[in-house]
Length: 296
Image: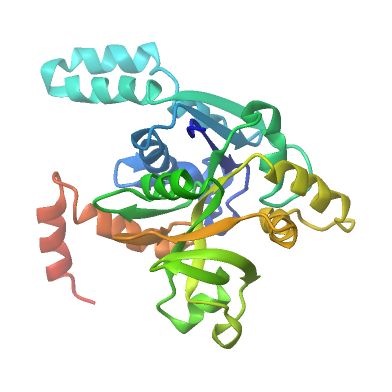
């Protein structure tokens, strides 16, 4: 079955960026002139996704506004700017036509498994992409999601995006997949260990950033929810481990030609902004001169 839908959880409070995120969602933090979540949406659309479901909270209305039609006030302002601002008007209108957007308010226990339960009726009996709103893998010549879809088309099962760990501290930050190596960068997953430490890691493939799930994950999420202790968080990995215990096939796929960006913390966010700014055609030259002359 062709993958047409994607889910983006975006209900968190972004506490690591307070006080900035008191009024503005972390997903809307800009990378130069484009919010983080737009990068993820555009990559999904480029991979053929038609329906994008964003699971939000009461404080995330600006995400909906961003992917809506521009206000009449903004349209009139840009029109008054003539041809000089025509491209800005075109861009503002293009954003609203990227995909069919559906917004759902998150309900249930804390944890990254809850947004999945919230979208069950919309997803139905279809495979879908589940991807974060504050990190991504920029890959060439084929994007992260296109690579995941290729692997899904080959194996017809859930697929986890992965990157190679390069630093010892990576083994204390991410979950790692282990199992039978089918070929370079492709593992038939038998185990997933969260933050194992380098000595206990089942491989050097860290599962991050985005996933393709088959609809049977919903039943395993129900089981994980039934087993949840009072006050505990519900994680998608809880369901994945139950799937693996039940013999379900799951593939970990190393994203080739990619670089992982984690904009969920201050330092990595600033690194991402600087790197993307140095590639931006309007400002890269002047920024390079500034950085070169900066006295530290």
